[in-house]
Image 1 (spheres, helix red, strand yellow):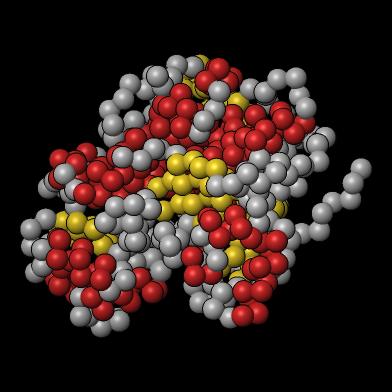
Image 2 (cartoon, rainbow, N blue to C red):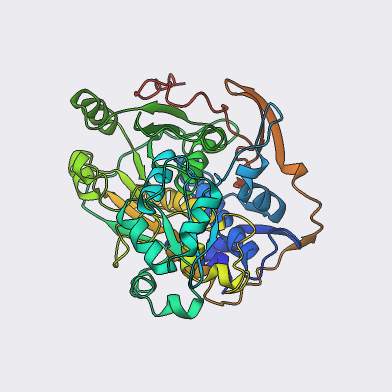
Length: 465
C-alpha cells in the first residue's frame, strides 16, 4: 500500500478512485532521510482527488476527473513561505530566538516568532525583554532540557526538549497519538442534506458557493483554507486584533482569502461571529483543543447552532493525552518526536527539508473537509474532522514502503511553479498550488489583501444564471 492509498483510506475514500491520480516523480525534490517527498505527494494527491470527487458530484460529470500530482509543484508549495517575495524582498521566517539551543544535558528548541511567545520565553528564563541571543544561550546552557521545556510551557511559551525516536516511543503522548487515526472523522447528528446549486463553467471550482470561516494561524490551518479558496470557496479569516499575523506569513498563507479582526471578548464582536456562523458551511480551527470552546465553537456547540456544518479541527499534539492542551509548531513537533535526531543526530540535531508536517497536514485537512462534503450529499449530518501535526509525524516515521511509481522526470528547481502578481501588499512572487485535477483551477482568483481590513461579513452571493 502506498502513502497515497494510506491517506485516501484515512479520508474514507473509495479505494478504486485512488487509481485516478497520475504522478510525476522527480528525484531530488524534498530530499530527506525520511520519506518526506512521498508523504508530501500523498497529502497533495489525496487533496486533489477529494476536490475532483466533490467537483464531479456538484457538476454532474460522468466520471471523477483525474488528479495530477507533480513532485516539483509539491516541493515548491511545501517551501511556499521561503519562495515568497514582496517587491523582491526575501521573507523573514524565523526570529532570532526561534532555534536550537545547547542545554546542560542536551538540546532544546524554542519558538518565539510572535512577540507574546518571545515575552513568555524570556520571562520563564528570568531575562529582560531586550535580552540578546548570547544572553539567552548562556541561561539555557545552565539548565537541563526538560527543566526548560516545563518552565517555559508553564509560562505559556514554547520550548521542547530534543528526544530520540526511542525516547519519544516511551512517552505517554506518543502512546496517545498512536492510538488515534491519521484523520479523525465523526458524524455528530442527523442534520438533513444541505443542497448546493450545481456547478457550471470553467475552470471547475468544486467549493464555489461555500462559506468557510477560517480561525487558524501560522501554516497548517492556513494551507488548508487557502486550498479551499483556490477551489472557489469564500474564505474569511478571523483574527484577534491583539494577535496580528506576521506580515510575510499573511502574504503567503492568506492568498485567495479575506481577512477581518474580531475581539471575541467583546459582545458586539461576538454577535458579529454569530452572524457569520448562521450562514457558514465550514468552520476550520487551529487553536489548542478547547481554547475556543468558551466562545461556543466546540464541535457539539456548532452542531446545535448550525446543523449540517463541517467542522475541521487542527492541533499540534492532538486533542488527547497529557500534551493535548499544549501549544506547538512544526519545528517543535519534529524535535519531540525524534525527527530532528533522525535528520541529524543526538549530538547535532537536524530538520526536515521543509515544514512538511505543517504543509502535509494542511492539505490533508482540506481533503478531509472536501470528503466530508461529499459524504454529506449522500447522508447529511454535521461532520467533524480532527488532525494533528504529531499524528502526521507518526505516519511519516512509521517505516512503511512508499513506492508510488509514476512518470520519472528531472527536478531543476522551483521555477515552473512560481508566478507573480500585483497586490495591495506590493508585487508578489509566490508558489502556485500543487492541488491540480483535469479542468480545475491553476491559480487563486485574488491576491492577499492587507491583514485585518476586510469587513466581518460574507461576500454577496453571485447572481443566479
